[in-house]
Length: 417
Image (cartoon, rainbow, N blue to C red; front, side):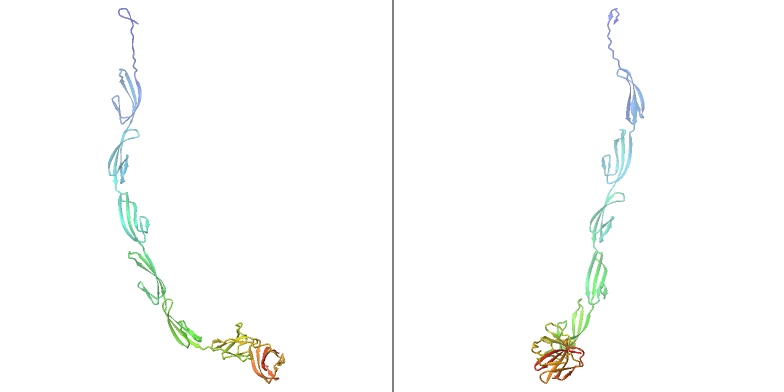
C-alpha cells in the first residue's frame, strides 16, 4: 500500500514472473564433428557456452562431447564365378562401394575391388582296354563320367570323360589230332596245354589256350589158341588157324591195326559107353575127369578112361586134349540093385589080405576091377574061380573089388595089410 503524489493511498499490485537462469550439462555424441555455440568441435571433450534465453536471461550450457569418427575401407577380392557382398551378388569384376554404419553409429564408406575369375569346363574322349584310371578312380565300364577339378586360376573346372571300354578276350579250344598240330604258327607234336597272346580287333589283349591231345596210331598182335571156332572182335567166326587183320580207330580217332594169330584146336568129342555091368568107358582123350551129374562135382580120383560107379546115379566125363575140353552127355546108372549085390554065391577071401586075394564064383572065369575109396580105377583083369590073384602092387589100405560073374555084379570092400 503506497501513497500517491496527492497523498492519497495508492494500492499497487505487482504481477511478477521470475524466469530461471538455466545452467545444465548435456552429454552429446556426434560423428566426425559437432557445432556447439557456433563453434565446431572435432574432438571429444567438455565444452560450455552462455546463451540468452528468450526471456533475456543468461543460460550456461555445458556439453560432454564424444566425437566418433566415420571410417572408410576397401578390400580386394579375387574369386570364382560370383561374390556376395553387402547383400548383393556380383558376377563381374569391378569397383563397388557401400555406405554402412559402423559400430559407433557413424557413416562408413566401404569399397570393394572385385575380380571375378571364370570357371571352366572341358571334356575328353578315351578308349581303353578293360579299365582306365581317371582322376583317381578306376573305371571298368563304358560311360560318361564327370569330375570337378581346379583350373590354373584356382576355380572349379568341370571335366567330362566320354569313356569307351573294350574287354580283353580269352578263349580256348580242345583239339585231338593223330599227327603234329600247327597252331598260331607253331607245330606241336606232344599233348599239352599251350597259350598264345593275341590282339582283338580293338587292340586289346586276347589270351588263347589250346588243350591239345596228340593221339598215336595203334597196332597190336594177339596170339590165340582156340578150342574150336573163334569169334574175334570184328564179329567174324574163324574155324581155321591163320593170321587175320582188322583196321579200326582208337578212341581218339587214330588208325588202329589189330593182328590175330590164331591156332584152332579141335575139341575132342566125349562119348560115354556103358557095358551094362557097371563099367563106363569114354572115348579117347588126353586127360579125363568123371563128374557126378547130380551134384556137378568132380569125383575124386576118377581120372581114367574107364570108371566104375559105386552107386546108382548119373555120370559124365570131361575129356581134355591139347588144352581143349569137352563134356560128354550124362549117362544114367540105375541097375546096381540090392539083388545084384547078393554075395551068396560069390566069395572073396582072405579079408584082410596081404598080397593075394582069392575069388570063388559060379563058372570058370569072371572080370574083376580094383578101385580105391575115391572111385579111381587101379586095375582090371580076368580071373579064374578059386585061383589066387596077385595084388602085391597095392599099398596097404582099403579098396573096392567089383566082380562081374554069373550075370551078377558084386562089390566087396577089402583091406590090404
